[in-house]
Structure formats: C-alpha cells, structure tokens
Picture 1: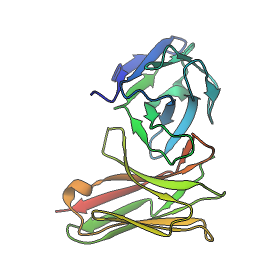
Picture 2: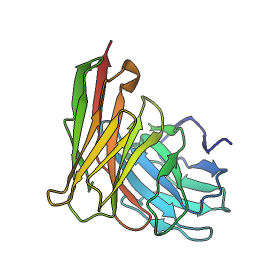
Picture 3: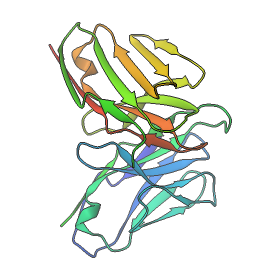
Amino acid sequence: NAGVTQTPKFQVLKTGQSMTLQCAQDMNHNSMYWYRQDPGMGLRLIYYSASEGTTDKGEVPNGYNVSRLNKREFSLRLESAAPSQTSVYFCASRTEGWTDPYEQYFGPGTRLTVT
Amino acid sequence: SQQGEEDPQALSIQEGENATMNCSYKTSINNLQWYRQNSGRGLVHLILIRSNEREKHSGRLRVTLDTSKKSSSLLITASRAADTASYFCATDGSSYKLIFGSGTRLLVRP
C-alpha cells in the first residue's frame, strides 16, 4: 500500500516551459487535492477533485490546469511556467464520508524551480 | 487568504519539556485538524477535534478547542528530539476542503 505517490520529486524548468506533475493514490479515495507550499508558509489549495470526472478551483488556480484521469490519478499541468510558480507541490487524497470528519493523506511533494 | 494562524511562528525547547502552540481562525468550522510536517516531507495527520468537542487526547498530544474565541491549542507533552517538525492547524472551509495556517516550527534540543 503505497498511499499517495508523486512524480517527479524534483524539477527545474525555464520560464515558458510546460510540464505535468503526476499524482496517484491507491486508497480508493474519491477526493484528491493539489497544494503549493512556499517557504515559511502553509499550504494553499490550487485545485481539487471531489470525485472522478469533476474538478474545481481552489485558492490559487491561475496558471494551472488539472485532469482527473481516473479515480486513482490526478495530474497538475503548468502550461507556461513562471518564476512565481517556484514552490513545493503536494498532492493529497482524503478518507471517505461526506458527513464525517476526515483527514487528508499527503504525497512526498515535488520541488519545482522555475528560472 | 489563510484561515488559521499559528502562534508562535517558531518554538525552541529542551527535550522533556512540553510544547504548546496555538491556532486562531476566522470563520465557523465543522472541525479543526492538526498536521505535522518533517523537513522536506509531506504533511501527516495528527489529530482532529470536532466543533462540539472541547478537548481531545491522543498519546502525548492534547488538543483544545474554544469556538467562542475561535482558537485551538496543541500541547505536546514530554517532547522528544523526533518531535522537531512544523505543525499546522487546518480548518474545513467547506465539506471537503481544508484551509491551512502558516505553521509553527518546533525545535526540540537534545
């Protein structure tokens, strides 16, 4: 049971380049999330997917797109990277139960630098 | 904008001492959660307290919640060097989104 996995672990891009961050979970969770974490700060929600086939914007969606490929996989795409997108990106999924309190399980993160 | 704000931003204590960190938030919540993040790693869920609970314990962790003051505290008793990490509170802004605070960096000196 690997939990939440992310690839790649590290990436350096030049301004204007594009890339896709991959995330997969093997816990059969419906909801998945993408966050970014800047130095000395908490996590800010970029996009989330409450179920397969649905995606919604979070707090900081500009410059990103997402795809919920299937129940397991949720990818984050940067179409034209900018230095302001230099950050650590975390994917997460949550336990089931819409009316019960839940916890989120996090992947190990992708450290992205845009030069 | 972030819902939760932790205080202090950084805390340094000796092994064996207790560590207390606080979280304040702005709007009504269904529950409040605390997460730990070791350097360079993802967040790990520690404990959840519902809005109708005032105190909860889990091992060496004690969480309190005061909804009238919109604040929570996390107490780690008998701290260990392995407790060195950043600690974040998170509140549920809606039924399936969490909003994280900026965190408290805890250093436990051996």
